[in-house]
Image (tube, rainbow, N blue to C red; front, side):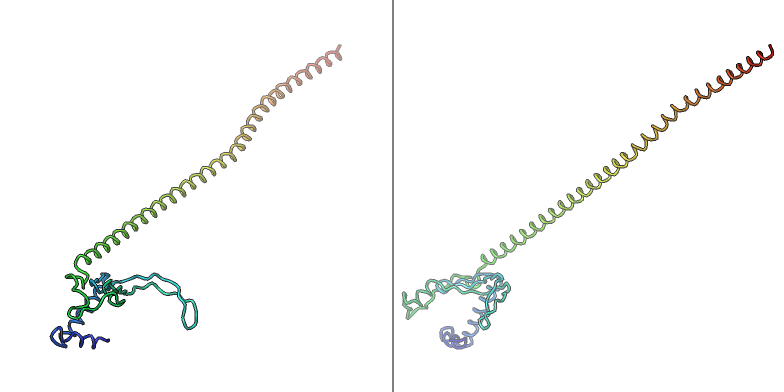
Length: 219
C-alpha cells in the first residue's frame, strides 16, 4: 500500500478524499518534524518513532568487500507497539467494527509539551556541562602556564646563582695570588732595607782599616 492507496482507504471514514489526504499529510508531517527535533513520537498500540545517533564505524562494501569508514550519522527508527506486534503475530484478532489501534493520548503524535520541555532541559544541561568542561580546561591551562613560568624563573635564578658562584670561585684564586704577592713584597722590603743598612757599615769598616794602614806607614 502506497500513500495514495492509504488515502483511499481512509477517505470514507474522514468525509472525502481531500480530507483524507490532508489528514495523512498532517500526521506524517507532525511525526517527521518531531523526530527531526529529537522528540520521541509514541502512539499507544501502534509504535514509536525516534531519532537514533549512530557513531562512526567501519563497514564492508558488499560489492567489493572493501573495508570503508562510515561517518557518524543520525537515523529515524520505528519500534512497533505490543498491540501491533500481537496483531501481526496472530495472537490477537483484528476487530471488525472498531479500529485496530486505539486512540492515542492527546499530544502523543507530536511528542507532547512535556517531552519537548524534557528535550530542552536535556539540551540546556548538555550546554551547561560543556561550559563547565571548557572553564575547567581553561583553568587547567592557566595553572599549567603559571607552573611553567615559575619553573622557568626558578631555573633562570639557579643558572644566575651558579654563574655568580663560578665567577666568585674564579676570582678567589686571583685575589689570593694578589694578596700573596703583596705579602711577599712587604717581607722583601725590610730585607732590602737591612741589606742597605749593612752596606754603609761595611763601607765605614773599610775606611777605618784604610786609616789604620796609613797611620802605620807614617810611623
